[in-house]
Image (cartoon, rainbow, N blue to C red; front, side, top):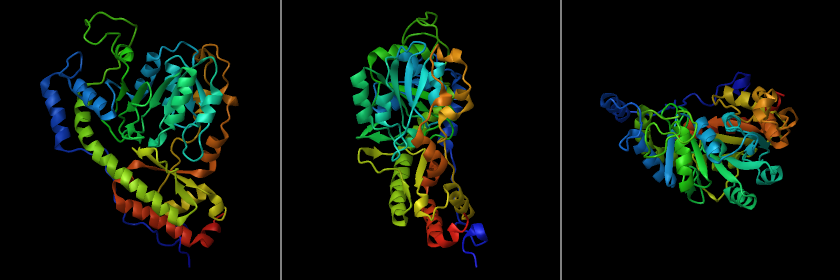
Amino acid sequence: MAKLAINGGNPAVTDWVPNRWPIFDDRDRQALLDTLESGNWCCMWSENSKVAQFEKLFAEYIGTKYATCVNSGTASLELAFRSCDIEPGDEIIVTAVSFVASASAIVLAGGVPVFVDVDPETYQMSPNAVEAAITDKTRVIEAVHYGGYPVDMDRIGEIAKKHNLFIVEDCAEAHGTEWRGKKVGSLGDIGGFSFQMGKNLTCGDGGVMTYSKDELAISCYSYSRYGNVPGGERYVHYVPAGNFRMSEFLAALLVVQLSRHVEQTDTRYRNGEYFAQELEKIGGISALKREPRITKRGYYFYFLRYDSSKWGGIHRNKFREALAAEGVHTGTAHNDPIYMNPAFQNIKRSLLYGSKMDYAKVHCPEAERIYNSEVIAMGKDFLMEKGNVDRIIRAIQKLRDNIDELTKLN
């Protein structure tokens, strides 16, 4: 008689606790109502605006001198690159795996993305691959803390210093992540965050740049607000720039959401560490490398490394299918390499300003292998309930206990 649900048995998980996200209550409602009734719906130049209030709070939280809010995470990256004074055709090194905006923001700023392979133990950009990709056209290293796992900022910092390069941290999925006790977004020259609805700090949509260098304060602000400067005259513009301001309503939500964020991050981190320890007892499927320099993980994705050789050779996709039948649904996140997307395979040459880059010829073997046969991804929300972690462990353990039946699915 079949024991596995994929073969007709009873599923291991029938009591999953649904996760609500975003989390909100009367404080959020009141913040929106107060903003509505204030009549001040646009941040403009008031130091008493909700945007200014959140910028101050967020800079203090991240550990930077400044924060400048914008209307999306993509905009935070585009304007960060512009603030690094890149010229058309300058190269920016970026990981092969992330959400497409990590690379499209480079193109929007006039740069040329140079994709590099990942470390198989961390799924983050390989420092060795970064250094090998540097040319005389390289201007910036974009350190994408993909899924909330931080890049090796020790090595990236050394490489950037050696070659006189800017570091822009893409923290869109890493709010609360720490490297050696310092939060991402404070480790490079500029950090870019997203507040899109799924992120672990959200207002529906929006973004922010974080930085400490005084010389960046004017450029980051100016590029986001029509070329104005802080404290300057309203109709005096110093650079041709667009409007990327965040609305007062979104900032009002963020002020309240930030008050919950630390506790939520701690809960996910604690349950994430527990999950990793329990997976080790099962074998054949593991969390990403446990790195002592990572002092906090602000999870967006929880990545599992599946080893088919430890599961009778059954392919990762069939394993995921069997796990779903047991009541645990998973994905592969953004691990299909960005350069394989039609946006880059078919990119107009005019967007690359004379560069001879041909993304059809780019090949990052580790990134492609991981996407094709190894990675299993889960969204952050299950980590808010330790019971749901136990339910996932229960389902994986059931597959392990019935591996003979599982291998017959091949």
